Image (cartoon, rainbow, N blue to C red):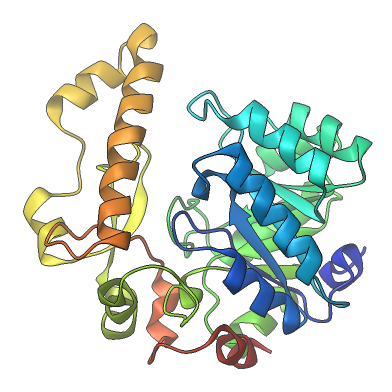
Length: 313
């Protein structure tokens, strides 16, 4: 089975994971210069012109031994999805990571122009589904991931997928240092996707408070909340998070049981939650909802991307 190095023509089997509001071209360019891949959520760009400009910038800066991609939310909550897919396919990149929906159309259109598609999955059932659709690899999102995470441990998830699926497995979650990379590879993954350690990078655009929180808090300070996107999401347990609680409101729970209204409630909650997260990430505010995973345990200072990569390789 191809290693991630072979799949993406990179020097080290690591993807700098796409993080909403955090990932940017400066981070990805530094990642590529270190011989790993970098990825940005398409939703980090408000307009398709901004997305196109980012693609052009990354193509111009791409070195040998580096690769870059974009993450697409492929369900109906992302009204920009079709336009984003079109622009990415027109401009070109090395890979797309799909999340939260069926990747069928993305796989079909991306493969026409030679772009690989890796699909977020949390169990064997979804892995087999995307294998049937022609995905190039799966991103196995485990219970150590930041943001929206899966229910299984890294070892359990990697081995379950490998038992019934022939796609390469890229492990997402629980990697903050070289030993963690080696552990995931020993379980059978071909590479890893690493997010939270890069929040506290010099190149990230988020506030110094957010970066410092990743330095000061650790694995025991990560909690699950339903208050951001309607889907459980990991955040740092700040005093504000403690104050507002982590459970959906009673009215959201009632509406979520209504089949006709459920989709709209999720879309509204997603929109409200993303705006709150954006404020916390990009402005100084007491309403701090900072998304991160337990791998911040190994973040002890705000460092340049190249130094964070050095810790991983």
